[in-house]
Image (cartoon, rainbow, N blue to C red; front, side, top):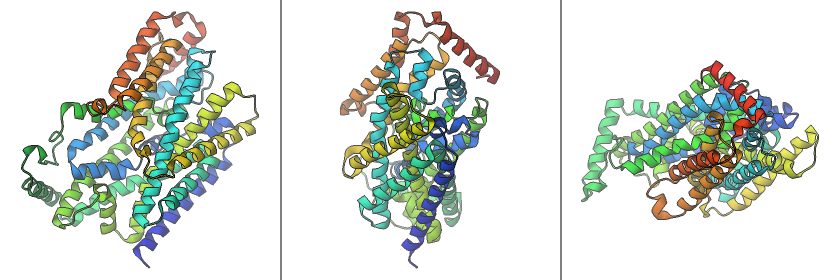
Length: 508
């Protein structure tokens, strides 16, 4: 039996397991709360692993190790910034958001929370937020489909379209029927698979090379050999340094990715689905532990690859294949197949979470504003229809693998982080924030990211999330101070006080 056959068997087992979990979740789903938020009954471990897996796409297993392999530890600042941002998000946002969304008319989406938080009867906040989510995430979903097609094309020499349709189809089925619970439970399985792969590959490689000392010596030898071939000192490498080869603004731009966490709808919705605000503490410990292990594994894999392939005198045509290549060398083909499945897991976990958020934006935040009342069963069917519509549009966009969709991932991350991040934080911690302040800040943050991110001179100077986040924060603050005081609205203040009471009990 060929190596590729073994690997395809492993991929088939993985697909079957995801569909089985989706069917189980389907049996547990009866109304829109179940479909969109798992009935607010998500255990902290499930929420933590789901948030992590839905955040870390194929970048974690391919992009990050490849960047470390090519340039060195200076590329790790993105992972450092993301880890810090995730910790702060779990520490300060998660418990308050879980309490506030339940207190404020049982809000089950980010846009509905903003409308209920400010008692915005004009629906302007909810509609604007829903449209921002829908537009950005449709392209985001499409980028995941493109990644799936490219993965099958490069790993199994299949056609791009076949791979794209297979990944999109399996993800669509378990998300369509399993809803939020299906996406969350499959995220747990996918997160554990990613963890196992990113821990085993570097450990086995280190052992095979004779220990950590040999690995470090090989990395130094590889850098020395490379530096001997360049004439300009600026082109030299020191891949074991966090600072070598970086600039202050470059490091700030990389670490600033962590700011995006506060506004990512597909991540913070996990906080809203927790069984209680008290579960945020356990969720934080589990989630950050997972994140440190997988990010550390990805970074170490990239570094080890430098030494290993230098000793083996093998040159990788594409640095982003370093993780996959090591797994193929170190393990039996069936195990290597499950490592390949971990890459698919990273892609599909993000894809499913984004489909659910898009569906909620269509049904809960746009259709309900203009539509008629529907029964619980009809609402679930509308939710599934929303998943299908978004998937079809994203699939049409993804048919062309040469489109720029993959480049929109960082742009969309910045857009969500700048548009929603400051507003979520201010909503939870500043009672003086007004609906007009929130709306103005949200729009201004998105606009700044849109302009900054499309001007090469600006985006190469500083990642667009930084100016977008700052502008949103300042505009929301200034406009709120200029408008009428929301402290006069008794309903708003009563809900804020109730949320603050629970936060005080939890010491957050």
